[in-house]
Every structure is written in C-alpha cells, then in structure tokens.
Image: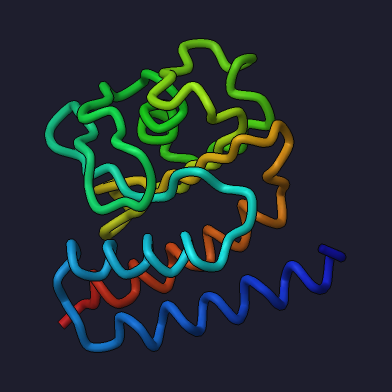
Length: 158
C-alpha cells in the first residue's frame, strides 16, 4: 500500500469500528467484533486479538486465529513488554526480540497496542503475521487509532 492508501485504509476501518461498537458498553462483545473485523480487513496476518490484564498477568481474550497462549506475565514477550512499558510495540522479526514467546511458530512479525482506561493499561491488542517486516509505523499508528476508538466507547466518563 502507498502511504496515503494505508492511512485511508485505517481511517475507513476506524470508522467501521466506531459504527460497529457504538452504544455497546460490554468490553468482551466489542473486542470480539473488533478482532473479527481486523481479521477480515488486514492482509497477511495469522492472529489478531486481545489479552486482558488480570493482576500481573495478561489472560487470553477475544481473538481470531489458531489457539493461543492462555497467560502471559507482564514484562515477558511482546505483549507483556507493551504492558510493562505502557507503550506500543512494533517488532519486524519476533525471533530477534529478547524473550519472545512463540505461541504460534508461524508468526514472524508482531504489533501490540495497549488498551487503556483512564491512562492505565487494561488489555492489549495483538496482531501477528507470518511475514517478517509485515508491520510498519503506519500500521502501528493506524491500530493505535482503532484502539483509541475502542477506548472512547468502552471507557466513557458518565
């Protein structure tokens, strides 16, 4: 995709997410639909979904793809690092990432976006690809935009 095409793609998907979850306060239902939509829209991925923060552990939430790791400690793997650093992680080659957890041997690239409620991480969006280098900064920014739409709907201040 050309730069402007990719930004338009993520704008369109963000609008779809907004319409899909509008008025629904249930986090599980919304994460399930966002996972399904991203699975349909994103090319060259083999897993997309959410891990929910429960204490000091990320626990598997709604997803699309093969069975996955059930629990990931904070600070371990790409997902656990995203929580520990409270920052998105963009990894071109997961095999070069110290502490990578191989839930699916076919995954070679990964992008993880924290989901926050009132500034605190409550979950992460995880997207995996079998192609090394599949994700770039535009993908990260586009997925951050999608997560911000989800956060705005889920954590509205009454």
